[in-house]
Amino acid sequence: MDEPRWLDERENRAWRGYRRMRRLLDLELARDLMQDAGLSEPDYDVLSDLSETPDQRLRLSELADRMLWSRSRLSHHLTRMQQRGLVTREECPSDGRGSIVALTPAGRQAIEAAAPGHVAAVRRHLIDLLTPEEVEALGALTHRVVNHLAGGQRPSPSEV
Amino acid sequence: MDEPRWLDERENRAWRGYRRMRRLLDLELARDLMQDAGLSEPDYDVLSDLSETPDQRLRLSELADRMLWSRSRLSHHLTRMQQRGLVTREECPSDGRGSIVALTPAGRQAIEAAAPGHVAAVRRHLIDLLTPEEVEALGALTHRVVNHLAGGQRPSPSEV
DNA sequence: ACCGTCTAGGTGACATGTCAACAACTGGGT
DNA sequence: ACCCAGTTGTTGACATGTCACCTAGACGGT
Image 1 (cartoon, rainbow over the protein chains, first blue to last red):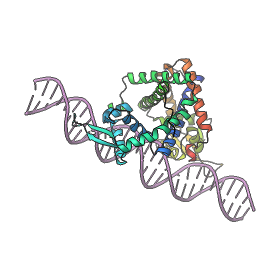
Image 2 (cartoon, rainbow over the protein chains, first blue to last red; image 1 turned 90 degrees about the vertical axis):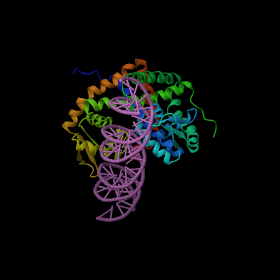
Image 3 (spheres, protein in one colour; image 1 turned 180 degrees about the horizontal axis):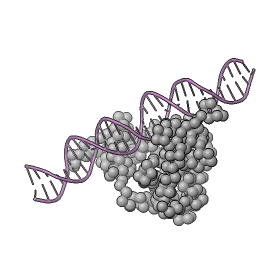
Image 4 (tube, each protein chain N blue to C red; image 1 turned 90 degrees about the horizontal axis):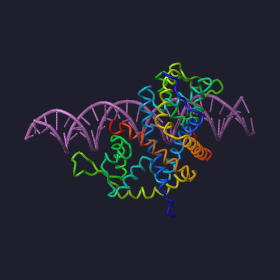
């Protein structure tokens, strides 16, 4: 094994900064979201993805793929959200194995109540702290990394 | 409540890209790390922080603060790592309540074996995909956000 | 129609993280 | 010397995520 190419000072700064930001931003956004909407981040993501869909409903596996979650994780999480009345499961007419996840009125209400505050928090703690050039750069760079990772032959969490 | 300022297209692209990258990068790095070193990311972080310290040992609360972990989480995790022989707990001479976490030889060996591959993975999936300007921008932007979040009166996870 | 194989989703056991409560100890004020 | 509020680290109960495995249904080849 050759001597590895360690990160230089600039690279290290970026890498550490990224990880620290990741952690702090997560804590902060999760805290805000829980306080003023009673939702966890995973809750919010599920509701958000469902609400963006024309019919407010999605096949479970379709939702799992969009979220980059395993089917198992999603199934467990849906069971909990279902018990809270935020979503329901319906039979899939075209596939007897399938299961369709649908937003309930309470779920719709929850995401609509939560969204403005959440977006405001994202602005306050991230977006509005950046220059337009930085927003642009962040968009470009993250998409490049995502394409690299998604394009590779890495199994998605549901295909393991 | 006024109509919130939703994210425009560019902002949305940055925000979604960030979250997607976050998730994919995490899966990939965790996978690699587990496969070729038998360590989880949290394991790696603990070992890494300890190994960077002059004496290979730290007060538990000091380590928790550096990692932005709650003391509880760290304590639980250390118990597991201790059972695997990667770290030990020592009494703190200056404070009877205190506990000092120290790297064992096996822990040192584990981090030294894991580090080259991990750094290579970070390069392969992130750093080497970016232009020098992007690395610089990522460093600058993340540090600004971190200062904003850490500077605010947000309680750290150990102070809740 | 009947296989054999694959896919969808669910389940239980277990690993990990969170939260509140606790005992042991510190350190300043009196 | 003594109190007492604050800090340190641990613990147990519980929430969440992961993994391996299972059943039911789909679907192509014969």
